[in-house]
Length: 290
Length: 280
Image (cartoon, rainbow over all chains, first blue to last red; front, top):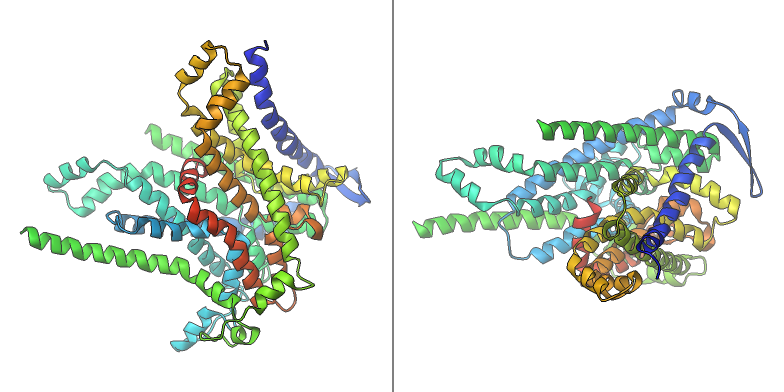
């Protein structure tokens, strides 16, 4: 009979092989690529070593700088709005018990729909000539706006889409944890004469910190990956006004076929994200030990 | 006194329902709008008419038009979605069982889980470049196998966390009793673990399929016309010089159907999965 260790190794092997071949090797490959210039001839890639030249190009690349800046701006503003709106609504509606299934079905729908379709939906609604938003504006006597075509408005328009897309999910997550808060401490506080605001400030808010953190981190990670909606809505434009980092990588690596330089941007992006994650986890850990 | 209080309570209740309904309407409206657009003809859409005679021409040209790739995209998405979901379920169940129920040193568990967390945080497009280079050298770009493997890897971290939760819920005593009876590890896995984690398999499977169905950047980089998936087909409408808005709407509506059906019939699995796994 085969030993326990044999089965243990065998059952973990597929996952290990998959992660090794498709995450670890590519990441190493990416680092290697970033020091090279690559030319394709049929299926054979020709690497020539260029040292740090690809990295040196980063700081002068306006697309890369716009990409990083817009991604951070997009993530921070969109996620902050979603959290505030979602939490506010969750606080308002904790007592509702009737029609839950109905509401929940509607609120889950946006996150199960392909991002590209979210883009298609809003492309229709934002259209300058026949979009419903401009129609309503004209109906009430305001000037129609070029929501996606103006460099002042485009990023804001994309943020609005993301807020619409994700607020319902933030709401559901925060509502679920609001409901697990113990009822008796509120009763105790109220008999001690605590007002609604005090209950919120000194009970609900501290008790909700873990759930708020989880929701925030979850959303930030996804917001940094944003690509699909922007691909469909603006393609990064006009100019670089909605250029996000995933888009920059796509453009440099695939559209312009700059494999080596695209790899350098990828490595730099991964490094930036890793730094943000480490800083964030340090910060939350510090908070917890305080 | 009682009556006054309940009247006030009823008023807040009505207000809360009003707020929630308004919120639901805001969420739902864009979907209804594109649904309406998919039944409009080009002129009604471009004139922004709210009242119109519904027509099926957009659906017809999306489904049966000679230049439309939609049916092929749909088939490709099905093959890739089902293929990667089956693979993900097998690999994740085996790995979860191994990690949580067999004696691994703590560092193995932690470094593997740590790695899944890091990988999950990295934008897929950063790795898509490396995958593309690798697959192209191997002649695996523009194949089902390439994209199935990529989607399996992308969704494996989430599946592993979710299946981990379910596998840990299996009572240890049950497994120990079977071991005393002389059951081998494969028997235990197949006869005890798998039947008990069936809800977990359903939740993980449904979410993996939906995420694979929705995935865009990696499919964009690893496929061409023959293997392109549904999101790519819709992305193409927006890339053309004159956007065929009504057809884009019709194709979008058709592409929401699978997720919508799953949402109606398997909502409890989806909710459980999203809350236990996706957030980790």
